[in-house]
Image 1: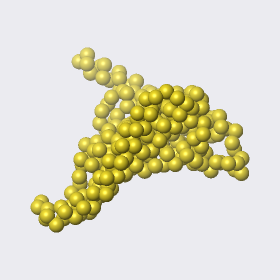
Image 2: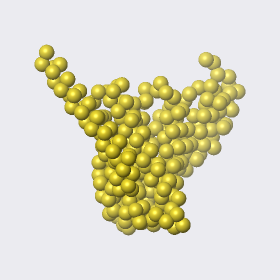
Image 3: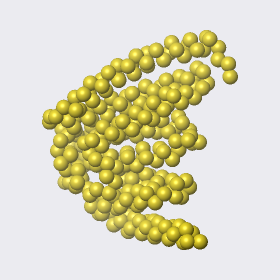
Image 4: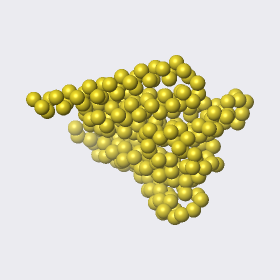
Length: 268
């Protein structure tokens, strides 16, 4: 498809502002990375700031991609790929503080949370929501038939784990008065966490069944449900605990059955 010089000029003129913003954002990120290498009590907050600025960078790349579609009628995957790579950098910054273990207990994050104790439930919710929106933005722009379809499962898995690890479950257990400060934000975080864990588990299971057949994907799906079951158990949702136990047992049996079938096939 031939693109007129007029459209090319319009596109280049429109993205000039975003390119300048990208340069500014990259300078901020470079500065924050340098500060993050220094030891000190602000390490956690610096990494949170780094993650937040990187989300901003993701959004700039997505906006340029939108202009490419709007003006040139071309899906510019180079900018989308930049956005995709930066989302990984967001997670890396946050995981430096909170870790990335799928199957850690609900209170294993206490030491990490003390390092960012001034980061309120409202701040946490805002960060989680911005990251979720950035992921959805990139995934939707690539479309359902993208070669990254199964790779994006990792983003949803890391989002679920990050959300679980950023919640102070001891604080949440104590703060059940609807009149208390940040009550709504704590509840929103909890709901998001449950939704993310369930969705990520389903996506890992689908990846296993429809694509990879790799045991690690199904094990990940199981561990995400184990985390979800721990949360429901702590907050007294007995019906969900029973349902989740059945789901976990089913997936464990399926994994065992599939692995036995593989071994039998090798012997033939």
